[in-house]
Length: 207
Image (cartoon, rainbow, N blue to C red):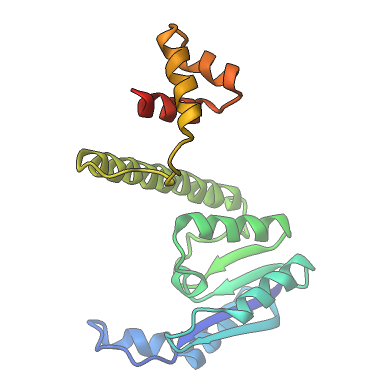
Protein backbone atom coordinates (compact mmCIF):
# COMPACT_ATOMS: atom_id res chain seq x y z
CA UNK A 1 0.00 0.00 0.00
CA UNK A 2 1.06 3.58 -0.63
CA UNK A 3 1.95 4.91 2.79
CA UNK A 4 2.20 8.38 4.31
CA UNK A 5 4.22 8.86 7.49
CA UNK A 6 3.03 11.47 9.97
CA UNK A 7 5.51 12.57 12.64
CA UNK A 8 4.91 15.11 15.36
CA UNK A 9 7.73 16.18 17.65
CA UNK A 10 8.14 18.87 20.27
CA UNK A 11 11.08 21.22 20.35
CA UNK A 12 10.10 22.47 23.82
CA UNK A 13 12.40 21.23 26.63
CA UNK A 14 10.66 18.70 28.86
CA UNK A 15 11.07 17.65 32.44
CA UNK A 16 12.91 14.42 33.09
CA UNK A 17 10.66 11.47 32.24
CA UNK A 18 10.08 8.47 34.50
CA UNK A 19 10.94 6.45 31.40
CA UNK A 20 14.46 7.57 30.37
CA UNK A 21 14.16 5.98 26.92
CA UNK A 22 10.75 7.46 26.14
CA UNK A 23 12.00 10.81 24.84
CA UNK A 24 14.76 9.11 22.84
CA UNK A 25 12.21 6.76 21.29
CA UNK A 26 10.05 9.64 20.11
CA UNK A 27 12.69 11.83 18.48
CA UNK A 28 12.01 12.75 14.88
CA UNK A 29 14.89 10.65 13.58
CA UNK A 30 13.90 7.58 15.54
CA UNK A 31 10.23 7.85 14.62
CA UNK A 32 11.16 8.12 10.95
CA UNK A 33 13.57 5.17 11.10
CA UNK A 34 11.17 2.84 12.93
CA UNK A 35 8.19 3.76 10.77
CA UNK A 36 10.14 3.21 7.57
CA UNK A 37 11.39 -0.16 8.85
CA UNK A 38 7.85 -1.14 9.74
CA UNK A 39 6.49 -0.07 6.35
CA UNK A 40 9.23 -2.07 4.62
CA UNK A 41 8.40 -5.15 6.71
CA UNK A 42 4.74 -4.76 5.73
CA UNK A 43 5.77 -4.33 2.08
CA UNK A 44 4.23 -0.87 2.05
CA UNK A 45 5.69 1.85 -0.14
CA UNK A 46 6.36 5.18 1.62
CA UNK A 47 5.26 7.88 -0.82
CA UNK A 48 4.87 10.89 1.49
CA UNK A 49 6.10 12.20 4.81
CA UNK A 50 4.57 14.94 6.96
CA UNK A 51 6.32 16.41 10.01
CA UNK A 52 5.00 18.93 12.55
CA UNK A 53 7.50 20.44 14.95
CA UNK A 54 5.87 22.13 17.93
CA UNK A 55 7.59 24.68 20.14
CA UNK A 56 4.87 24.50 22.80
CA UNK A 57 3.79 28.09 22.18
CA UNK A 58 2.20 27.36 18.80
CA UNK A 59 -0.43 24.67 18.39
CA UNK A 60 -1.10 25.05 14.67
CA UNK A 61 -0.20 21.92 12.67
CA UNK A 62 0.27 22.85 9.00
CA UNK A 63 1.67 19.43 8.06
CA UNK A 64 -1.33 17.68 9.60
CA UNK A 65 -3.65 19.84 7.49
CA UNK A 66 -1.53 19.14 4.42
CA UNK A 67 -1.70 15.42 5.14
CA UNK A 68 -5.50 15.47 5.43
CA UNK A 69 -5.74 17.44 2.19
CA UNK A 70 -3.48 14.90 0.42
CA UNK A 71 -5.64 12.12 1.89
CA UNK A 72 -8.74 13.76 0.39
CA UNK A 73 -7.01 13.49 -2.99
CA UNK A 74 -6.22 9.83 -2.22
CA UNK A 75 -2.51 10.32 -2.74
CA UNK A 76 -1.83 7.37 -0.40
CA UNK A 77 -3.69 4.39 1.06
CA UNK A 78 -2.67 4.43 4.73
CA UNK A 79 -1.37 6.89 7.34
CA UNK A 80 1.30 5.39 9.59
CA UNK A 81 2.10 7.12 12.90
CA UNK A 82 4.31 6.36 15.88
CA UNK A 83 1.40 6.43 18.33
CA UNK A 84 -2.07 7.92 18.68
CA UNK A 85 -0.82 10.82 20.82
CA UNK A 86 1.60 11.71 18.00
CA UNK A 87 -1.38 11.82 15.62
CA UNK A 88 -3.60 13.94 17.87
CA UNK A 89 -4.17 14.86 21.51
CA UNK A 90 -7.54 16.50 20.95
CA UNK A 91 -9.64 13.86 22.71
CA UNK A 92 -11.84 10.97 21.61
CA UNK A 93 -14.41 13.06 19.71
CA UNK A 94 -11.99 14.94 17.41
CA UNK A 95 -9.92 11.76 16.96
CA UNK A 96 -13.01 9.95 15.71
CA UNK A 97 -13.69 12.83 13.30
CA UNK A 98 -10.16 12.56 11.88
CA UNK A 99 -10.43 8.77 11.50
CA UNK A 100 -13.87 9.10 9.90
CA UNK A 101 -12.53 11.65 7.43
CA UNK A 102 -9.70 9.28 6.49
CA UNK A 103 -12.21 6.46 6.08
CA UNK A 104 -14.35 8.65 3.81
CA UNK A 105 -11.23 9.31 1.74
CA UNK A 106 -10.63 5.53 1.62
CA UNK A 107 -7.40 5.96 3.59
CA UNK A 108 -6.57 3.56 6.43
CA UNK A 109 -4.80 4.34 9.72
CA UNK A 110 -2.11 2.41 11.60
CA UNK A 111 -0.29 3.12 14.86
CA UNK A 112 3.20 1.62 15.15
CA UNK A 113 3.19 1.46 18.97
CA UNK A 114 -0.46 0.39 19.36
CA UNK A 115 -1.07 -2.51 16.99
CA UNK A 116 -4.76 -2.60 17.91
CA UNK A 117 -5.21 0.86 16.33
CA UNK A 118 -5.29 -0.54 12.83
CA UNK A 119 -7.98 0.07 10.22
CA UNK A 120 -6.07 -1.60 7.38
CA UNK A 121 -7.53 -5.07 8.01
CA UNK A 122 -10.90 -6.73 8.34
CA UNK A 123 -11.44 -5.27 11.83
CA UNK A 124 -11.02 -1.66 10.66
CA UNK A 125 -14.70 -0.86 11.07
CA UNK A 126 -14.63 -2.30 14.58
CA UNK A 127 -11.82 0.06 15.59
CA UNK A 128 -13.78 3.05 14.28
CA UNK A 129 -16.93 1.82 16.03
CA UNK A 130 -15.09 1.60 19.34
CA UNK A 131 -13.91 5.19 18.93
CA UNK A 132 -17.49 6.21 18.09
CA UNK A 133 -18.75 4.56 21.28
CA UNK A 134 -16.21 6.33 23.48
CA UNK A 135 -16.87 9.62 21.67
CA UNK A 136 -20.59 9.38 22.46
CA UNK A 137 -19.75 8.43 26.05
CA UNK A 138 -17.43 11.44 26.30
CA UNK A 139 -20.13 13.79 24.95
CA UNK A 140 -22.60 12.39 27.48
CA UNK A 141 -20.20 12.92 30.37
CA UNK A 142 -19.46 16.49 29.22
CA UNK A 143 -23.20 17.18 29.03
CA UNK A 144 -23.68 15.81 32.56
CA UNK A 145 -20.88 18.03 33.88
CA UNK A 146 -22.41 21.10 32.20
CA UNK A 147 -25.84 20.38 33.70
CA UNK A 148 -24.30 19.80 37.15
CA UNK A 149 -22.40 23.10 36.92
CA UNK A 150 -25.58 24.95 35.92
CA UNK A 151 -27.48 23.44 38.84
CA UNK A 152 -24.75 24.52 41.25
CA UNK A 153 -24.84 28.04 39.81
CA UNK A 154 -28.64 28.23 40.13
CA UNK A 155 -28.40 27.00 43.73
CA UNK A 156 -26.00 29.89 44.36
CA UNK A 157 -28.50 32.35 42.89
CA UNK A 158 -26.59 32.95 39.65
CA UNK A 159 -28.38 33.63 36.37
CA UNK A 160 -27.88 30.94 33.70
CA UNK A 161 -28.12 31.81 30.02
CA UNK A 162 -27.80 34.96 27.96
CA UNK A 163 -28.58 38.25 29.72
CA UNK A 164 -31.70 39.98 28.51
CA UNK A 165 -32.64 43.66 28.53
CA UNK A 166 -35.23 45.22 30.83
CA UNK A 167 -38.58 44.34 29.26
CA UNK A 168 -40.98 46.88 27.83
CA UNK A 169 -43.39 47.86 30.65
CA UNK A 170 -46.30 47.89 28.19
CA UNK A 171 -45.51 44.35 27.09
CA UNK A 172 -45.20 43.25 30.71
CA UNK A 173 -48.60 44.79 31.41
CA UNK A 174 -50.15 42.87 28.50
CA UNK A 175 -48.66 39.61 29.75
CA UNK A 176 -49.92 40.36 33.25
CA UNK A 177 -53.44 41.05 31.96
CA UNK A 178 -53.53 37.85 29.90
CA UNK A 179 -52.22 35.75 32.79
CA UNK A 180 -54.78 37.34 35.12
CA UNK A 181 -57.38 36.34 32.56
CA UNK A 182 -56.35 32.74 33.01
CA UNK A 183 -54.29 32.35 29.81
CA UNK A 184 -51.48 29.83 29.79
CA UNK A 185 -47.89 30.79 28.88
CA UNK A 186 -48.34 29.08 25.53
CA UNK A 187 -51.51 31.09 24.85
CA UNK A 188 -49.82 34.33 25.93
CA UNK A 189 -46.92 33.62 23.56
CA UNK A 190 -49.32 32.97 20.69
CA UNK A 191 -51.45 36.08 21.30
CA UNK A 192 -48.44 38.42 21.61
CA UNK A 193 -46.37 36.65 18.95
CA UNK A 194 -43.56 35.78 21.39
CA UNK A 195 -41.39 32.74 21.89
CA UNK A 196 -42.41 30.49 24.75
CA UNK A 197 -39.22 31.35 26.66
CA UNK A 198 -39.73 35.10 26.31
CA UNK A 199 -43.36 34.84 27.42
CA UNK A 200 -42.24 32.81 30.43
CA UNK A 201 -39.61 35.39 31.44
CA UNK A 202 -42.06 38.26 31.02
CA UNK A 203 -44.63 36.40 33.11
CA UNK A 204 -42.12 35.96 35.91
CA UNK A 205 -41.27 39.65 35.67
CA UNK A 206 -44.94 40.57 35.71
CA UNK A 207 -45.62 38.73 38.92
